[in-house]
Amino acid sequence: MSTPPDAVLPAEAGLREKALYWATHFLQNNWRKLVLFVPFAWLLLFFLAPFYFVLKISLAETTIASPPYTPMIEWVDEGIMHVRLVIDNFAYLWEDDLYVNTYLSSLKISSISTLLCLLVGYPIAYAIVRSSHTTKHILLMLIILPFWTSFLLRVYAWMGILADQGLVNDFIRWLGFEPLRLLYTHTAVYIGIVYTYVPFMILPLYANMEKLDWTLLEAAADLGAKPMTTFATVTLPMTAPGILAGSLLVFIPATGEYVIPDLLGGGNVLMIGRVLYNEFNANIDWPVASAVAIALLLVLVLPMMLYQHVQAKEDGLK
Image 1 (cartoon, rainbow, N blue to C red):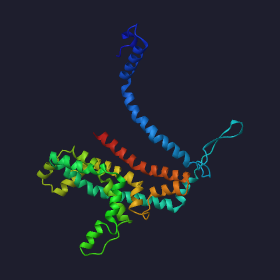
Image 2 (cartoon, rainbow, N blue to C red):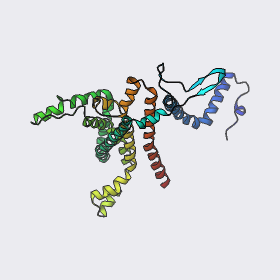
Image 3 (tube, one colour):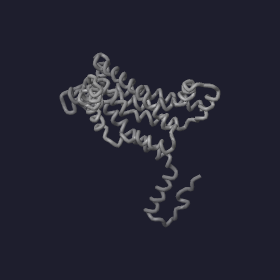
Image 4 (cartoon, helix red, strand yellow):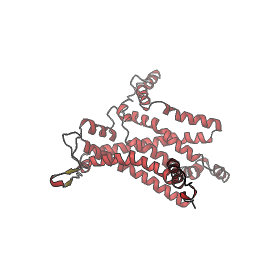
């Protein structure tokens, strides 16, 4: 049990000593709550507060004013509070084929990109885990190295590589073939997303594979299992948490990606990030743009709930 402060605090102690002692005593007894308070305060300040403002705008109407939407709460005569909530913005998303097709296109592109990142990242993560101690650190540094360069500069670099007169088409011409149209296509967008987000697939897979018991593979081989059978029945199930975590880290930001489709797709690739930009800046329709953002958030919450369900199920089996 903690000692009462007054029992050990000298009676002749000054105000500064008392304040310091009480602060120390408070930190000693409540440090766990304070540690938990920091992430909750961070979420409250940088997620819940912006989410509240976007939700409030999504329930308003467009108007020619500054800001360009009607207030949610108004005080009318005699101090009566008038609350006005408009849900037509959300209904409008389902009535207009543009938004439905944009959501479907974004989900399609992010899903295919996630699968491509998995196909590229899984062998790389496996090779890193199975390499020697020194080689492992070198390979991990090479995976992280692109983050030392600005994301925008890397996308611009891919524009130069995939251009009609870029490095890829120069090599194709050198081989004697006709150049390909790569820039401003879906192919360029997939290349940009996979290049950008494949480290987010590799690192969770590496962290998961690092904890595996590799003697199980040797045991399966001793029992006569072929390499593909061992991979399908032993390695793949054990790395499922890493696959799920890496897929979420790629799928969620890729769904709302704006820079890559805009620069590498040239406006020819329909994704929700571009629609959000147009509604906010070109159409000055903040309520509809906010409704689009809220609907996108709800769509992205579903895979997070699935991940939490799988994690809770695994924790329950342990």
